[in-house]
Length: 108
Length: 456
Image (cartoon, rainbow over all chains, first blue to last red; front, top):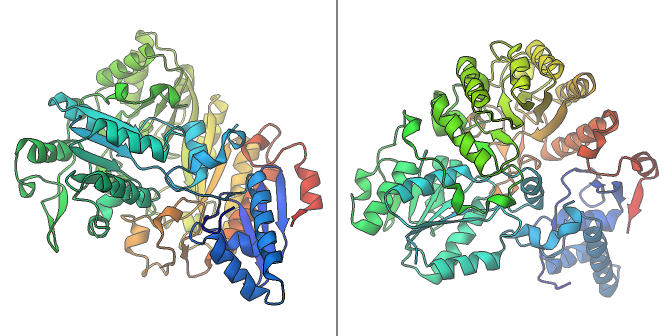
């Protein structure tokens, strides 16, 4: 994943509880309900098609100043890949061709 | 080289791609434009970017190979940011190619659209005659834009406009859509037909009446059935009537169905109707003529909210009409929304319970969306008066599933969460066999719901 990539969530049914700094997101995935932990919830909320992976990382560093940067980077990469594999978001969103990245597997 | 390239801007969200993959119809509006231009000898091509196969690279090659002298882009509100991106691609190829944009979004936001700096003209309202006259001006030295009704354009720093163009009264004069220019086989609902335009209703969340006129203008049944006959000859396996309310004139619909019967056209079809249909018993006749599904705009399950939508319907009419359709053997599809100006948490619960009842009693397929203030709607124009605050200005988010405004009673987070709860409630109460309409595997959802799988 490139730091300039712009992730975009495309699961449309999700809710957010908790606070802005400590959100708890629950998403309807293709296999049912999925509850995200705090870090994943923050990444989810920033995966709005406006923030790049780099910007998401910067924002996360502010929320978790005590965490080593490489660990946060690893968590972001891991969550985005996992969420994409579950059909919840796109890691490399291109608004002119959103289909390209989804691929056939989520369309059937 | 061609004269005019017509491009539909794609929705930016993958969900819309999913929808077009499963229920997509050919872009008939654009195909009508193409037919009108072809009738006057223009060479026209269409690129429908809503097709899954249409990629950025495809568009690039389309523009390079076709080398159009004029480009027309059609866009909805959600796809407007992509219309801007496409215009930028065209201008990158050549600044000299005039770019025209049309569709419901720019019709109601013409000046803002020109402010994007990439469109040369905005076509407002029905575009056939306006685009044709503009092509005559740009490509054949025809009338000056000032003489062409229905246009906005920029001259230096100034935005100019001509007089509005009234809707065309005789729709039989409009040539049939140029379907041959489309990749017809790629549309799941290739048999889409428009038998009339305009809507007499004044729903506060809709622009149909303002876009196409406040009167339902009808094509003659003979012309409609001729078109359907041609479609049958093209191998379509079903029909979808795209009129806002096909059942507004039952006498005419009866004539269409009789003519279809006489021509032995036996295709299944679906349409939109209203719950205040004059005679719900007519559904039986529709079912015998091949109707398999009817969509109803139910909007809200809370009487006090429904009464203020300008829709002029009541819940008892919903129950009666949806029930009649179900008993006639027609599958009812009901669309409702939450986050309306008068919605509270309580009224949204009423809506969800009412939706669940329709699902349970009449096996209705129920969809709940989030009220969205599209430019041109009463909601948009009177947001302040209605206590609405439009907080999201990225039109790419105007997809009916993302809350973009707060109301007097609910903020965006609350609306999102209530939408989620609504979905969850309907999913769990769906009769067997309907759960495949919802995300998640029906066989495992209970376990997943109980376990609440964690991620990361």
